[in-house]
Length: 326
Image (cartoon, rainbow, N blue to C red; front, side, top):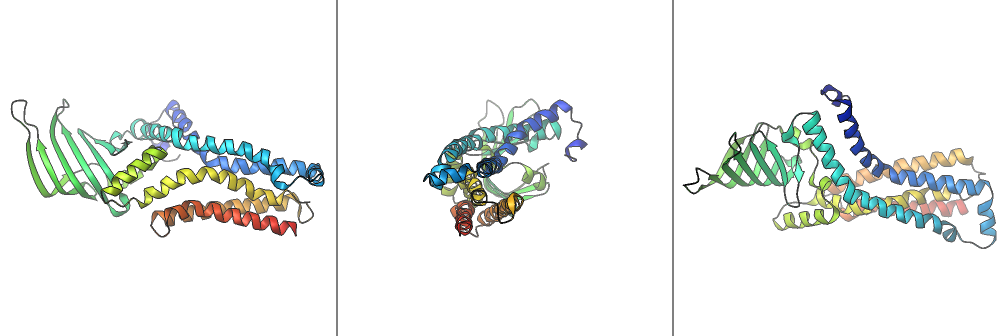
């Protein structure tokens, strides 16, 4: 917020920025909201002895929780749709407002199609098939140079580039010159070539990645295409699985609270249970973030990195339920 206020930005622009950003905040807080809803619902039933009455007539815990988790399954489906179809659109709109309208650097605004990431720098439009900012490398680049009246003058392609502040070193590519309508384009191959860039690598790194802009299916095609080209897609594979596993966190977070509110409050009361729930919630987010980081760096398989925290938390929740029953 402090950084944004340095820009000459109108309140209307700020309102539009945070209006589209609200969808991302909502997406992140749905699992926590589900936990709070389940805890308050079961706590109310427990205080009024309605849970005791239901258990006394032979209803199992699974039968009691079935209606709650039926509605939660609808929330899970809605969360997946939100993350798959809505968030990519709002993130692209947020980036446009930030880089074009607020920061006044339209070159840093990237748009992602199903196969390339597009940028603009002055009269240059360039795309990148895959960007590895941590290694300061880019793959599958194409540069289009235009005249002041936006007539295409030159095109440069490159299989790979080393990204340096102010200049990129291109490798194994072609240069195509478009002279005029009477003479065909001239094509020349090269092994090494340096092109001046106004964007610093640190600025390029702050822009959203392809996984932020693509749906679940589009990201899958993007990963397959670049994997076939021999590129390392580990980080995006983790994001791909996370698009599916994160909505199921709603079930996990809801189940975390069940063992602490279905029993009588003789062992410390509601305050203690809420404290334990908050501790487990914090532990889950730390575990999830750490696991995602390990997955993106190739330390653990992507599926384990994304689904592992959910499975482990379910096991801990079941263990807590068994312990509370004793």
